[in-house]
Image: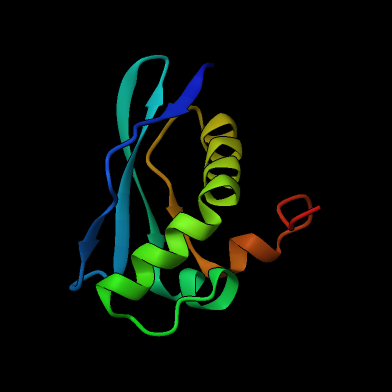
Length: 95
């Protein structure tokens, strides 16, 4: 399975308290998301305001995408919701 990510800016959804971004799995788009809580807990978002979340996403993009790719690989390329606890799971923490 070949997994890459688009260069599009994530989209903020205040109702879901998440940022949505697109992965390409074997060339097909798969919409994934990361929770506000994960961005606050692990990537330094100062608040749930869109500007703070985008800054945190940009700072943590490499790790966010790496964890997302790992989950996509494990789940057969289905949509992923990255929650705070996932970043504490063995094998998902930073090196």
